[in-house]
Image (cartoon, rainbow, N blue to C red; front, side, top):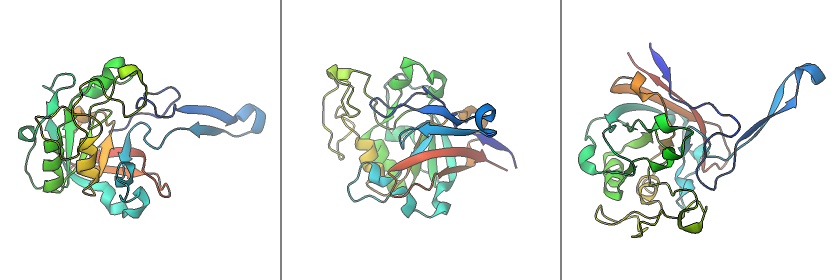
Length: 234
């Protein structure tokens, strides 16, 4: 069965969401000094290719260790959204209504990994996220966020939930006519017990239908965790 790795490597200085902990991977024990190698890893729970649990944004949401491991293997459909421009909304009309367990949003934005442009990805409108939740889809994307990501220092702040100056409402039931602020797509998805996988890569190497395995670290009471995302198909 063919397979493809959809994960970014974890390494010191890799891109993170504005305001999240920096990633460091440092030697703790070395072959020269100790006869073996051990690395000290420091990172946030939403480092690199990772999965969001409902408890990431929902006060009563389930933690990642409350899901059965089978939930992290999904029958997925890839949706080609590479025609979308920087910070262009993804609307319900852009999404399918098909028999699948997950939709994988192929924006092509992984090509900007490591560049400032990576923050300017397309994003789900509240209505598009609501459509996914109503269809029972988990959502995965090859970008930093399913919501708009604030530019570093937007509004004079590096606060991770600062806006990019768009204004509008953070109401999770906002419509597509409202400017997006905060994390309404997260609320629509995680608030309905869906899972979100962010920072995928290499979606051009998989077919339209495939099995997506995004199995997280078994992080106790985790609001999310890094994953090794793998695609397999017949």
